[in-house]
Amino acid sequence: MAKGQKVIITCAVTGSIHTPSMSPHIPITASEIADAAIGAAEAGAAVVHLHARDPKDGRPDQSPEAFAPFLKIIKQRSKAVINITTGGAPTMSIEERVRPAATFKPEVASLNMGSMNFGLFPMIPRFKGKFKHAWEEPYLEGSRERIFKNTFADIEYILTTCAENNTRFEIECYDIGHLYTLTHFLERGVVKPPVFVQSVFGILGGIGPHPEDVMHMRRTADRLIGRENYHWSVLGAGRNQLPIAAMAAAMGGNVRVGLEDSLWIGPGKLAESNAAQVTKARQIIEGLGLEIASPDEAREILVLKGGDKVGF
Image 1: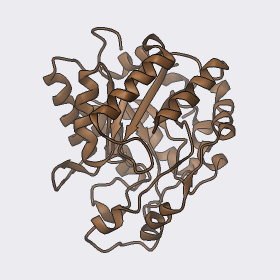
Image 2 (image 1 turned 180 degrees about the vertical axis):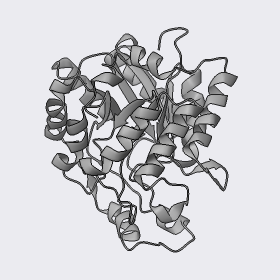
Image 3 (image 1 turned 120 degrees about the horizontal axis):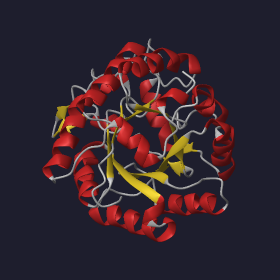
Image 4 (image 1 turned 90 degrees about the horizontal axis):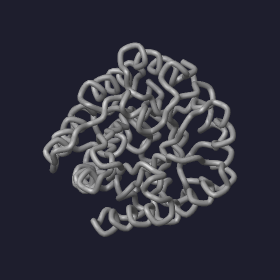
């Protein structure tokens, strides 16, 4: 990040990791997701990263029909950059996962840079309540033997499917090898700089949350990609969210928070909203003497096409 450049806060408002029984504050319906995203933007998030859920039982839903209602509301009521997931959930096919981004042509879409073990099953013994929906526990337990598939062919499929839409990508790197995969696509010209690299720390199966891991990701990205060719952001899973946000902001990076990544606002205390987590991140950033980026400043930094050129 250039000297003096403002810090982009991304908020991932619901995701497909946590299940509805784990927190009453997870947005489920289209109106809840829209309100959560707008609240996050009002608190200081320049980018909102969006998944959809089935309003009846909260399971991940990657149909364009599930995204359409809240995309329009967020666009009407906020200037935030809208980022649509192509990760969806590990249980989905690559064709299913790319459909919302291909349909709605957002300014930004997420893109996972490698297949991996993605262990959610440790959350089962930590959860002390009773699961409300039949799908929740098997979904979490199934991650013990499930691979989150993101092959070279899958990555290229998403890139080529969205190539004509001028959608840029939040490139999610869960481990060091993912940076090498990104470098491969950059060298082939399939991905063009500046790239928005989202380093993910603390998912079981990916790189850990130790400060040395954060430094290692940053150093490796600098060496492979060149600091002038990428913008770095971080997300820490669970209790790692705010400590890693603080480390990255101090190192010239950007920050992602949200209930997709962590349900918590402090030890043993559930976050009551996405906006509350954004506010905490903003306090850290401004406490370091830094400024947060507005949505339009984020568009300029990330070289985005503009909110008037999307398909919704």
